[in-house]
Amino acid sequence: MTGPLREPAFRRLWLAGFVSEIGDWVLMVSLPVYVYRLTGSVGSTATTFVLALLPSLALSPLAGVLADRWDRRRLMLWVSLAQAVALLPLLTGDLVLVNVVMAVQAALAALFEPAKNALLPELVGRDQLAAANGLVGVNANLARLLGASLGGLVLGWSGLPGVLVLDVVSFLVAAVLLARPFGLVRAPRGRAPVWRAWLDGLREIRGPLRGMVAVVGLMASSQGVFVVLFVVFVTERLGGGEAEVGLLRGIQAVGGLVGGALVGLVARRVSAWRLLAWSLIAFAAVSFVGWNGPHVTTAFTFYLAVFAVCGAPGVISGVGMMSVLQLHTSDATRGRVLATFGSLYDGFQALGMVVAGALTAPLGLTALLDVQAVLYLVAGLLVVVISRRASLELADRDS
Image (cartoon, rainbow, N blue to C red; front, top):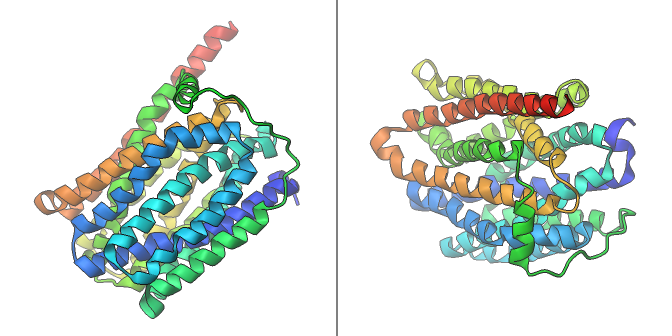
C-alpha cells in the first residue's frame, strides 16, 4: 500500500466518505426525479434544489467556525447520526416534506464538508495532499457509480421508502467508521463570537485566493444549470426515464475513476493550478459535444460514452480546486475559508438553478446547456491568468 492510503486515519476517513456518498447520490438522483414526475415542472425541480442550498448558505459562518474550534472528527460523527434521523420524513412522500428533507440534509452537509476538507491536510503530508484529494475523487465517483445508478432503480422499484433505507444505512456505517479517534489531539480554539471569528477567517482570502472567488462562482453557476437541466435533457431529448437518468449520472463515475487515478500518478509533477485549469477547459469541450449531440444522434450508447468521458475532467477539476484552497490556507483558519468558499459555491449554484428554471422556456434547452459549457471554459482560462500572476508575484518576492 502506497501514498496517502498508508495512513490508517486517512483510510478510515476515505471509507466513511465512500459509504456516506453512496447514500448521498441515491438521494441526489432520486428526489429530483420524484419531484419532476410528481409536478411535471422544471420550475418545481429547480425550487427543490434551491431550497436545499439556502440552509447551507445561512450556516456557512457557523460551520467554518465549528470546524476550526471543535474536534473535526467528532463533529463529522454527530452530523452523520443526525443525517440518518433527518431522513425519516421521506416515508410520507409529501412534496413539502421532501423539500424539507433536502433542506435539512444540505444544512447538515454544510457542517460536515468544511470539517472533512479541513481535516484532510492534517492526516497526510503536504506533498501527498493532491494525491489524497485524488483518492477522495476516486472514492466519490465509485459512490456516484453505485449510488446514482441505484437511485433511479430503487425509486422505480420501491419508491421513497427504499431510498430512505439505503441512505440511513450509509450514514450509520459512516458514523461507525468515524467513532474511533484518529490520534489527533485538538483542543477547543477561541471564544470570540461566531460572526467575529468568521470575519477573521475571511481575512485569509487574499492573494491568489481572491481570484478563486470568480473561478468558483463560474464553476458553481455552471453546475447549477447542469443539475436542473440534466433530468430534462435525458427525458425530453433522449426519451429516457428514471433508470436512464440514474445510469447516465452514474456512468460519469467511470471517467471519474480514471481521473482520480491520473491525479495520483501526476500529482507530484503537475501543480494544482494546472490540474484545475486544463480540466475545466476539457470539461467545457466534452460538455459542448454532449449537449449538441442530439442534432446528430440520440443513440443511448453515444451518451453513455460522452458522460463517462465527462467524469474525468469533472473529478480532476474538483481535486485541483480543493488542493489550491487547502494549500493557500493555514490550519487555524482552514475550516472558515473552506466554509466560505462552500457557501460561495452554493450561492452561485442556486443562481444557476434559478436561471435554468426561468430561462429554459424562452431561450431553449440546448442554448442554456451551451452556456453551461462556456462558463466552464471561462473559468479554466481565468485560472491560467491567476496562476501566472501568482507565479510572477512569487518570483518577484524571491528576487
